[in-house]
Amino acid sequence: MSHDLPPLNALRAFEATARLNSVSQAAEQLHVTHGAVSRQLKVLEEHLGVSLFVKDGRGLKLTDAGVRLRDASGEAFDRLRNVCAELTQSTADAPFVLGCSGSLLARWFIPRLGRLNADLPDLRLHLSAGEGDLDPRRPGLDALLVFAEPPWPADMQVYGLASERIGPVMSPRFAGYAHLQNAPASALLGEPLLHTTSRPQAWPSWAQQSDLNAKALTYGQGFEHLYYLLEAAVAGLGVAIAPEPLVIEDLKAGRLVAPWGFTETTAQLALWLPKRAADGRARQLAQWLKNELRQAD
Image (cartoon, rainbow, N blue to C red; front, side, top):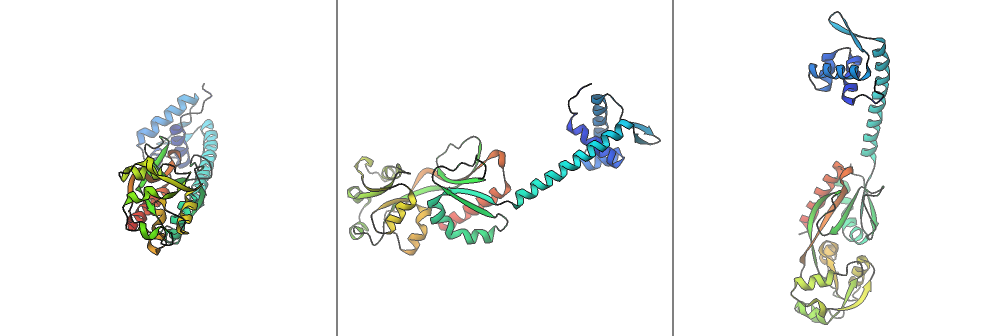
């Protein structure tokens, strides 16, 4: 006699048959055929080495062993159903925790947060800011919104939202604004450019896309994070390089201008979440983000 648990399908067939006192009704509830339930009952009896039912007229009657297993399996399946229902409810009630950089949070997400909450009230979005240290594989984070280049990690489900577009921006308050606003992009080669250590390739990438010699770039004040870099640009301290979504509100308000436009990079803004934790709310959020980014074009 085996001491391993019997196959789950056999136990489910038995539990339903014993509870409903009918093979036909059990088959209907389990969405299988009468024959499939009968075969599973036979598998279970062979596994246990005991008879669980005896014929009783045109029906079935539980043996003493069958009664014991009915009581135990009924209690076990009831507990499983209750726990699964609780887990499903707790997932539905829990906030959806999204990680993103502080610059993306402050400059793009927060101005749209009211609209998102109105459009997706059941999402209950909670935002967690970080700079390069956020990982949706860790507990406490459901997904990550990030600018990154493919290929994507194999253990991630990735929703691509928009290609990254970057470009130089400056404030009308900047001392060099008058002579730069109508100058060609090559005029920036003589400027001490604001830059960030978190995105060291931003300026060289833009220069290459603009057919300029990246080695001829001159760097001025540096900042640890993109958010500080853009605040410096708004304050008129110089020319910065920025992803378009992060400065769209500043461009609309006239706090910044982008005389040379924006060029597409090989990176994408994407929503990452672990494949093991697929969540229907992520699909809703991805579609909302994609629509919002498209409207900004």
